[in-house]
Image (cartoon, rainbow, N blue to C red; front, side, top):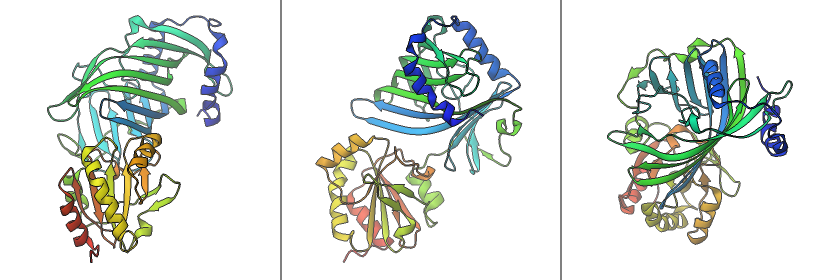
Length: 391
């Protein structure tokens, strides 16, 4: 296991060792690729954990998400899993088929990874480099503690790809560039930066994605169970997302998932501490028109009942602090606002449709969920049914 202390030196070394360019023998791209494939197909286990930052921009959206992923390789098989949290989606390739399921869930699906029939790979290795156009930028020490290796930074165009994106929908990578820091002895990637143009149903987006190694080990005997589908799961065509229908079907009338977070001002936010009050969780973004339309009504609701028996928590989804703070200067909120980019939220609270409102009773039970622009009057009635005293 490479110590975290040694790995954190990577960014420092990258900046400090620019003068070593040309000090080591060149590593042809084909050789680097072959070494990586040998590691992925070999009998020894490779385990990596990456910190990931993804920035998606278009004419109407500016989203930032930060998360971690763990990947394991051995004998042509692999596993990709979000680090931390329960119920998040895991992908497993057993050498023949790709499976996706939630930790602790009951269902699994066999998704199509790509439409172009390429063999599936986990992030970040699923990025399709044009290996014929790879350029070497720099060679430098990898930054491992103990016996160090030589790393190379390469840059290459990304080949266009097409992938499924839900029923009847696809996303297309139309072009981009990737820069990779790889170990010349093994071909293993330690860092990657992707800049690409992506077309979807809502138009074009510009993606900026950074992968930075946090933890790594290589050489141990593999845990074969990692690359198997857990027993007892039921196959479905597609795993359902957490949306209004799923909340009502699976969680309505049950204890709401716990929430421990820190708001924009550093204050603690805890559902457990709000027992005795009706709680409204408001999931929103600055670029969502219905969210903007409802914002003033939500604020008036808090001013009227926030000191009584109602607690409102706003959750800003996939936007950085500066964007949200600038928005709130023009549209002040008197209730706590939590950033999903700075807090790890339970899977049911990783919302992708805006606005989404969750109403929780004074006893801590999830009463109902609403999404989209259905009018503020219905939301007010649901809050009153949940226990908010509107007198």
